[in-house]
Length: 345
Ligand code: SAH
Ligand code: SF4
Image (tube, rainbow, N blue to C red; front, side, top):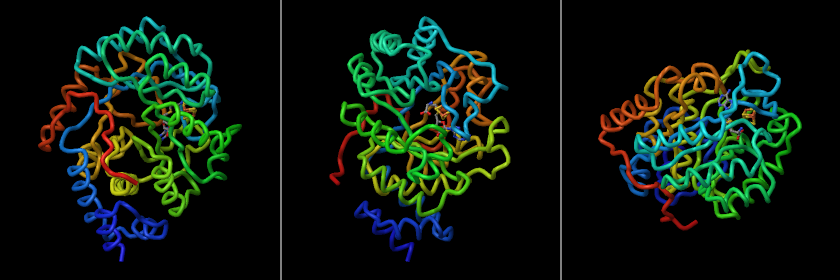
């Protein structure tokens, strides 16, 4: 039966929760699933791979997400916050390597005023690139200001659609508010990116199926899923963590149901498998987010252990990933890589 569901999803881009669950529970049909996702990727978004340069501009955070190395209670981490001039400097370098999109990511909080971030956005926009922000929960006014400053996209993972689990892993945070933030981001005209962590302790297969249905219901433009990787500096240090295979399955199913969106081969996947990003690119993904953070900051932005390329330079990463993409007969895109809506839900 799950094999038939894959065929149905490849044609109709629809599945019920029960059908999604059946596929997620059956590992005997993984090859069929990955191949179907690869065909749908080729049909809707083609062979071009979009590179987004990830600039990790601060590891300070006011939140205490139980899984994350940047959580405020982790005292084993040297904290940094780049000065606006340094952010611009790293951004300028990244643009010189050919990136057409920069993703500005940081921990959450008011370590910069919204006006400071808006002014960084305005300056970087002058370099002629698209900007994605990934700076957590803000008020509608703040999201609006940043959008007006020129930010094109916003990335905020729902992490899990299981409300109880969400609130257990995010002390002091509220699941409805997370959803409201995403709806606000969408309403303001950002290309909206979300996604979830796979393999959180206590996460059921049914709730992962709900995650995928949520992505579709929200009308997400970009979905990043990755395995939860236990961090020894957090309360979840002794937990199991998610698997590469399950993350890949969720990613492939996301491609089948949302055929024309952008889907990154995530760094966390490559941390679990040295060929993780290439395997992901052959199973539905069409985006890679190489790191453009310079110097020691790369290692200090330690969400989880085993993060790849912490001793490499942005120039090296750019060359390395381009070679890898070519090795699987795909091409690096040189446009902005906005989502082109083809499939009507
Ligand atoms: N503070 C912002 C952006 C930085 S965190 C935010 O939370 O939105 C970026 C992503 O890192 C999070 O969405 C989370 O899914 C991921 N992450 C954090 N800790 C992780 C871990 N231990 N394993 C895998 N991914 C993790
Ligand atoms: Fe902070 Fe984001 Fe990590 Fe949560 S996931 S602790 S908000 S950096």
